[in-house]
Length: 314
Length: 314
Image 1 (tube, each protein chain N blue to C red):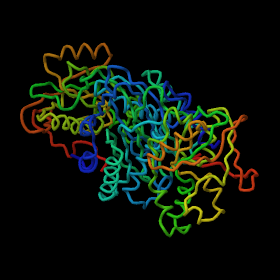
Image 2: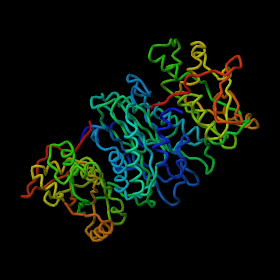
Image 3: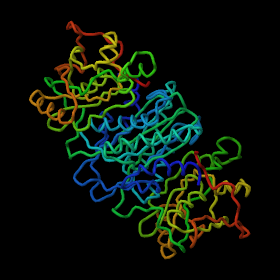
Image 4: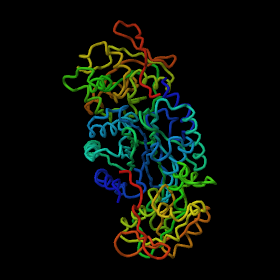
């Protein structure tokens, strides 16, 4: 047996769940939960782009899993399982794979899911990862981006901007005495269970910057939105960085918080659900009639000019 | 809107099928076909490892899709849809993406499937791709690797060795006057519909070399196997390369043919199903009592000594 198969047996087979056939067949076989729709999403992560090459491997693995769980959270879906591909340089030490698998094991336990299948290959470039997550939702109850209507409040979970500031902190270019910011960059908190059908009219997770991502809701829904910058929740650590970083907080991305359109009549229900999940929710703006455009009002009530709305790979 | 979103809209949105929500949400939503089990597999492909950096992008895309379809073929499953991640250097020309998408479009039509979702990111390294395929099978009818029994015949589809020789041909180190070999390296033929429950007792697709891959069936099934090298079907082009390449044909991989354990009583049924699918099938050996070991008999009836059984990434 080649080293590849021993590596898979050592590190990944212990992560395999029902349906994975112990990772010993060409594919997983899974009976879909009856009466549910499948929700499916895939994300890639590349060293040097989505994480730092010397980030601890357990946190890299957990970020990979959690960014995908965050997509399920945005759709109002419950996690079911995942498939994963790992392309790593041949010289990658076994301890890296051990740490990576340990991170997955920890989050599998936390989120109640298991590995279904995947592929492990070599690469001449940086570590390149992909993960496809499967979730389920009651038929017709997936939350989409196109349900926002003028008058709905724009709500966000948690705090916005920690991911972008956390990258600077992890790179050593921003003080981070408590380590909060770097932690939030390396370990997103998927907000599962907060966005519920019948309460939340539209949602997505903020991965590329609040302003740009809320723009996706606007285009899908055919309405505008006004965001009050002063209302956008920032952590103590983000506030300590100073208002010079406000624009980066609004556009930098890597937050993996939810942005949601919620009718005022459902606001109390949202707050109750979020409180039960231990997640803060804050109204930061309101959807408006008109062209699909995001207006950000600064502290003085005038529109902020942002040089870019968010992150783009190309 | 960043270039990333325009790129996705231009090249990948036209590939989106039902459930993909036009790639405009965080995830796809799919009602699983009632009364079927899901079959799921994920493969990664990296430029310079799984394909040549200057391979035509349409063929790269089709190889990515087809290697995954080959996994479904091995399980006896029917294709349903796929998710895909593409990590490419920022300087990748738009024409590369256009060619890549054109290849997918062509094979989507050929195999009756569509794109469900995915992710497009930049990378500082070589193009890194992943694809997760979804298929379905009747409950309990997925074909696994653990069903081979002593006395079953070992059958293969098509011809063995063209993939490994095709890599040499594509690299210019082996003459390939007809282009057959390079074509077989660049464009696998997934053998969908050949491996059927009730006929085939165990199967896998030959991706890492016939000898190594059949060893997986042996270990999963708890039996040995004897392969007659002279019976292993080689294409005219592979035979023209000479018997000096026989060992490479048996161990080189990238064949994406099926290796199957078939009771003699089902051999005629296998041949009928394969003929209807337009696929050649050949008995190349027989499973035996004893330790999970692959014995390859050379033309004179003595066991061949192979320096390695197949490909390993690590």
